[in-house]
Length: 386
Image 1 (tube, rainbow, N blue to C red):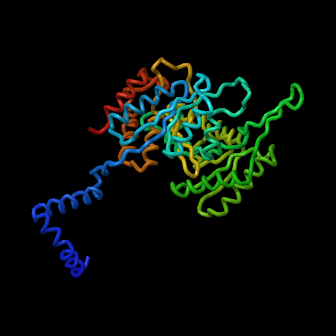
Image 2 (cartoon, one colour):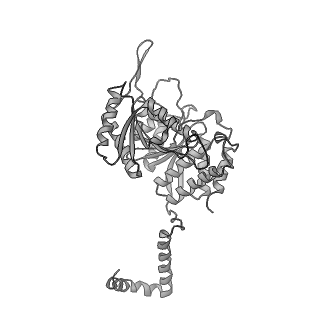
Image 3 (cartoon, rainbow, N blue to C red):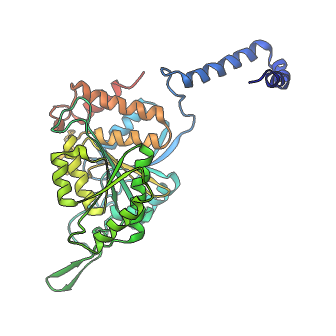
């Protein structure tokens, strides 16, 4: 700042200095200076948020309510500035109606952000093909599902230090709910692939890679058999790839992709694929780093973000047994806080979860330990900063 500008500022503020008194003005000035220094200093945590964010919560089925209890307990202990609007939506517990779905959608549209458990889809046909899980995605146009598969420090698996991202289109493909019986004993199930949505998910994948500093996008397909449907998806990805010359683009057939993930997953960076393949690959990749209980996930539209576990399992056989692993849901909650620009709180929770796993003293049964869900949650809370 030049001397002339500094003198001008002193003259501008001189009436305020007189009104406050010199000592009070010095206190305010030094306080502002210390805050600015704190933002630059590596050891001082960022300022806490003043506002409270409203988030829609859908516990879902199976162990979902137990996992959400863990999230609420950790948020309360960490004084996280988030208020949950909770809705119980379940097809298997007769707690799902169109009116209730409308209430949930209204909340999600108002809040823009949600955290949810798995809404179990019954296999029995009861007159409607589209599940409530699928209705939520379509009505909010949650077209992109992102699962970041990352090895947990301190927990060894066959492949350690994994870091890859699976991006899945989840509004069409095989999950279009278009089935009919053309003649008795013959069912036709339509797989819908459109250029518009294929290009949209491809662009999302390349934008994600660009933003996150990743080097390669791999399109996963079965165009050798489904020459028109998957052929259109593959063509769309190749067209979008030309707009991102700095990112390497490859494609791979789905069955070979599964084998390569098991043998050498390090060759992949960002994978983009249609609906069904993404569902399969999400679960396979989660198994590489510890299973369904440790991998977070999230779904995006142009306006909304929904945070959930990466591998969607209700784990119904564990209900009421207090054995579920809350890691994936807690990490999803941490990602949600980052999305809300609550960086300090996000880092606080993810660090606490990873610290508990790295210490190895408190682990749930899926990770080879004997801790209950409650014990793991208490250990996370004990590792939060005071």
